Length: 359
Ligand SMILES: [Zn+2]
Image 1 (cartoon, rainbow, N blue to C red):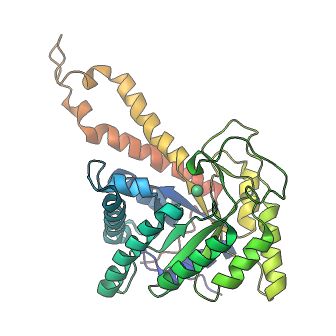
Image 2: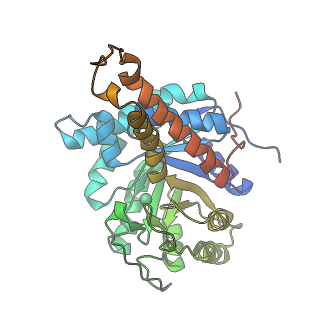
Image 3: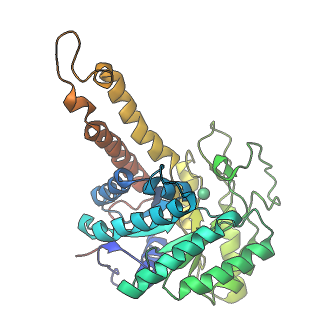
C-alpha cells in the first residue's frame, strides 16, 4: 500500500486518524511537546520542520492561562482564551512549516471538566465557521476518580467531541510524579492499579468508547512525570502489550487495536521507549526536557553577559548593550535550545524523516 500523505498544517478528524495509524504501522511515535506561548509553539514547529517529523503541540490548563497572559484577571477565562489563541495561532502558521501538527490539551482532572467543556463551546463555533475543530484532541484525566465515573464521563464528553471530529485522550492508572501530585514513593507490584494500568480496565474503556468515537489511552506502566534520579523509573512496557492482547483476543481485532500514549517519559531508557512504541504507543509527552533546554541556553547567555542585564550602557567604557538585552537575543537562544533537544526526541521516537505531509 502506498504511504498515505496529508496536507501540511493542523490535522483533525480523519486526517488525525491517518496520522496516528501511520505512526503505529510505521513503528514510530510523535513527540507531544508542552508549549506556553508563541516562542515555544514556534520553536516546536521549527524543530519538527528541521527533523521532517510530524508533531503534537499541547497545552496544560496553566500553560493555556499563561498563553493568554498571566496578568489576565479571570483565571478561568484565561485558561479557555489562551487555549483558543494557541490553536488559532497554529491553524494560521502550521502549514507554512510544511509538517503536520496535532493540537491537543493535556491533563484535565475532575475540577477541570468545565475547562474542557468551555473549550468545546469554542471548538463547536470554530467548526461551524471552518468545518474543522480548533483542537485535534483533548485529554480528560479522571484517573484519580473511580473507574465508573472516569469511563462514564469520558463517554459523555466523547459523544460531544465526536460530532466535531475530535479525539479524546483518557488516563487509566495514575502516572506518578510532580504533575499529578502523586508522591515519590512507588509501589512496584504489578497489581497496584494506581500505578500500573490493568488490562481489564482498558478492555472496559474500549468496549464503551470505541463505538462512540476515536480515543487514546494514557496507560501507566511505571512512568513518572518529571526527572528523577536514575533507577527511580522502572518501566514495564509489557503492561501495554497485555492490554493490546486482551482487546485483540476478546474482539478479534488486528494487532495493537489501542492508540496508546506515554506520559512521563523523561529519562527513560531508550530500549524501553522503543519497546513501548512497538506496543502501539504513538505519542510521547515531553515537557521537562524542553523547559530545561530553553532555560539552559538563556542562563548561559546571562552568565556570559552579566553587565548587559544590569546596564543599558557600560558605566565604565560606555559600551551600549542593546543588542544583548533585546529580549529577541536570548529568547531566540532558548528557542534554539528547544529545536536542538527535539531533534534528539525525534530520533529516540524514530519520527525523524517520517513526516507524511506533502504539499
Ligand atoms: Zn502527563
